[in-house]
Image (tube, rainbow, N blue to C red; front, side, top):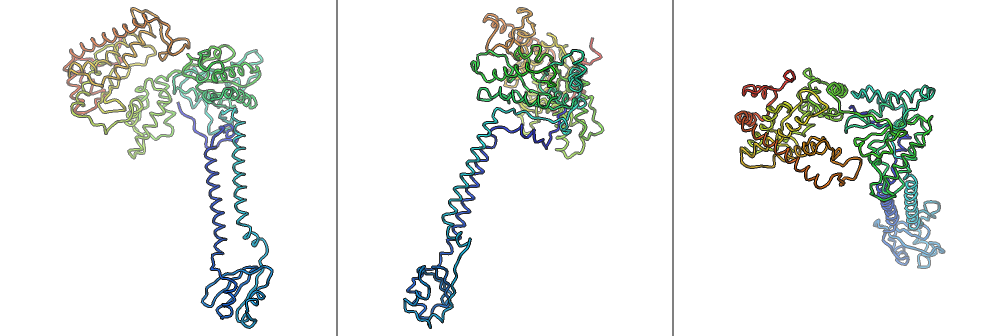
Length: 640
């Protein structure tokens, strides 16, 4: 799904809502400390400048009188009680006299005559005014001012912390104004999701014209729960509803309610609903609501568990809506199985909209939206890219297009080519190429035979997906890979398809064991994936002949109905039977893979040697090898 552009200039109301208590306190403290140090440095500098005026050589008043008698003094400047005497050689010396006595009387007391004094230029200055008092009081005044400024800064710091403490329980929701065109998203910006958009269009109609619903006695649901895999566009759809209706959009994550202190989350919930009611019509969007909406009563945190308090407040606020209030709650989650039943009852989130992964046509439309601002070469065919990306979500397709543009820019090209898009598919699925990861000759040969084993098994087994590419170029954590694609997209998978997939995964393990007589760490991921698939067949899908149609685990391996993670709804005997069934499935698949590898050993050698020489085999070349060895490639027209 396309991602809405970020608005660089937020509204003042949004800026206020985005303030987080305590944010910036540490930085402001260090900033004030630096300012204090600079002020202290300034005070010391001023004091040093003032003190430098007193660094002249001092002379006693008696020695000054003797120098006047000897005719060594050129000029004398008298300032209050300070005397600066300039000698004939230019040296300036300073002396002090009594404040009560005049300068001439002081020298006369030491025997200086009027004729001797007439030979010296004497000037008397009496300093007064602001500068005089500033210079004299600076040693006391500046330290006092520094202490006062420091106390004022610290008091502001404490006051700010106190104000932030009062705002600790305020909502952190981000507000998108109805007139914010830069962040506005409509249904035209959302490709696919046809059924979901039809369901949500009623909400848009209600927000625009609620009168026609009220007149006929209809009540629009207060809460809408968007359910789907990560990256399918749940947040984007919620924003599109607000954009189509032209109402305020409050967005917040479930984890933003929860804090260390009990009661803060409930306070933020109350504040959020109050703001939404004041700005109605409005939409409140809670992303990842399972962070606070999990089943209560798990025994974690006791009766004052912060998460449960927050959930209780959400339930109360949703019940408190008046029928005429135009506030809609939209929540999103990819784990609806863990939500508390009280959230899903009628009157709360009673409308549930499921958003599936996009099919081929939807993927093509999503790719077109993401390609609007990208210059394409003439060979680009988005239909081919849509066909080669089954199982990709909208976020995956966005990443695919972005990686293709990055690859083109890295090679200093102005347009994105089809080759860039093909490479970006593999990069999104498995990671970037590890060109610096050089294999030894033996490791390269073992990797080639390992991947060739997967390819041969996938080509022989009737229910396995056909091979589109084989490579022994390292990507991500894989030394090599076999790229398979289904002939046509399916919503359901059968037991036979699962068994063939497990056999294909174990083919690499069989090749290493039979050809080299040893096992490496290479098949570790294959074993993990195939074992997990076999266990799901037994515990989730009821595909075990001995256990029968019994579901023992839910999605993600958790037990059903929101129970604890470590709780099991079956006995130890049933657990042992599950392990036995899983081992049987793996053993049968291993035996089947060994038969395939032994029967098609010449084909295995041909593919492995071609991989060692070329490192990559594309679909056309691989199918020509199969035809040459008497194996019919899998195509859509060959399906019965």
